[in-house]
Amino acid sequence: MSKVQLSLATTVLALLSAGAVHAGPIAPSTLKVTGSLDVPACLVTAGDDGVYDYGSLGPGDIRTGTTYNVLPAISKAWKIECEGDTYLTFKVTDNAAASASAVGSSYFGMGNVNGTGKLGYYTVTMRNPKVNGTASNVFATSTTAITRATTAAVQQSSYTMGWAQTAANLQQIGRVFETDLDVVANLAGSQTMGGPITEDAKLEGSLTLNFAYGL
Figure 1: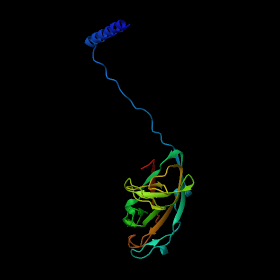
Figure 2 (figure 1 turned 60 degrees about the horizontal axis):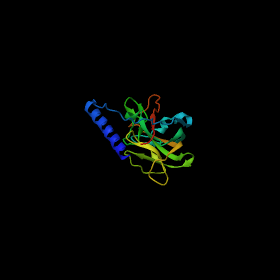
Figure 3 (figure 1 turned 120 degrees about the vertical axis):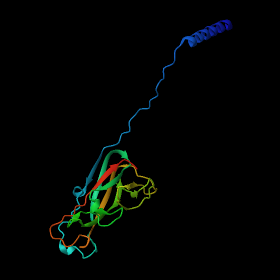
Figure 4 (figure 1 turned 180 degrees about the vertical axis):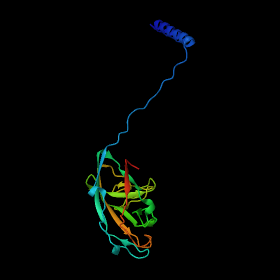
């Protein structure tokens, strides 16, 4: 039995040696990693379609000089419903940035009057946040670090806003995200507006919210 095994081994070795002499180069092969990263579809709804209307304002609402008239806050409920679990954040683009009468990362423009005069600015605050119907925290950050808070000022495009856990400085995952967005308009004084108002002027603040799945 041992002689048969030795003879078989010798024969295989000879065949392998012959193949090594006459074989050509081995063609390369490719390793592939496939799959897909699917993001859930999300539906955004806002009270009054996201329109914050201060109605008709008169000359009596305009202060003299550079004094601002801080108008009452208007609050609208926003809800983002997604088809699957996700982290959710958003950034904003101020479509009237050049008309802001004050400089600050949380100040947004309201339009011009009298040519280059400025009507003022407004702020936006996240309040009463919820994820999947349960109270959560929120954050606003210009880095990847999160500091959770019960409210957060919406800030310019270098900042990211989102929902955070209540017990840790981490994003909150969920399917349904809610928050009130409170707007406070600061009506500029007559000097900032470039003089008395001689014709109708409209507040034209416009902010685009760009949602994303995570930081």
